[in-house]
Amino acid sequence: MKNLKTMLAKGPYRSNDLFRRIASHTSHGVGSPWAFVAALSIVLTWCLTGPIFHFSDTWQLVINTGTTIVTFLMVFLIQNTQNRDSHALHLKLDELIRSNEVARNRLIGLEDLTDDELDELQREFTDLAREKRARRERASRPSGSLGTAHARSSRAG
Image (cartoon, rainbow, N blue to C red; front, side):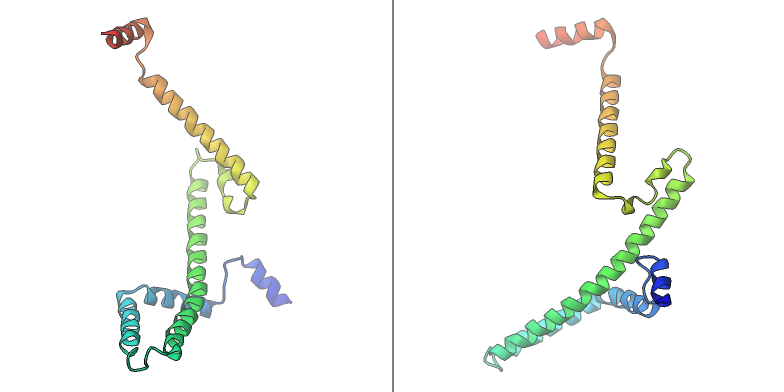
């Protein structure tokens, strides 16, 4: 029980170091051009052996089972890598927000907010963007009655 409390205290993305290293190396390895060439070679070999095995059900089952197992395992490795990258990115952004005196520090840790709180914040940012657009449009319009009269005359002519 103490071990579980220790693991939970370390955060949601803290994983076993051995698994982290394996996942990281595997993720980098399978993302390489050589891994693609190896996978392509396996598929081509399987295709070429079709006539030898008379395109049997077993022949088809071999590739289906192999790809299913590999896909199933890769989902967990990729998810682990993405979780770690996402967590690191959030920490970096939190540090940038914290170090900027103009930024609102309440934006630190947004990933922990509820969906309703995120929706409210999204509405706030949408309103801010709308206000900024309106200010920019007002600033770009000609000022005074001369500009309005000129705009009317150029439309009439």
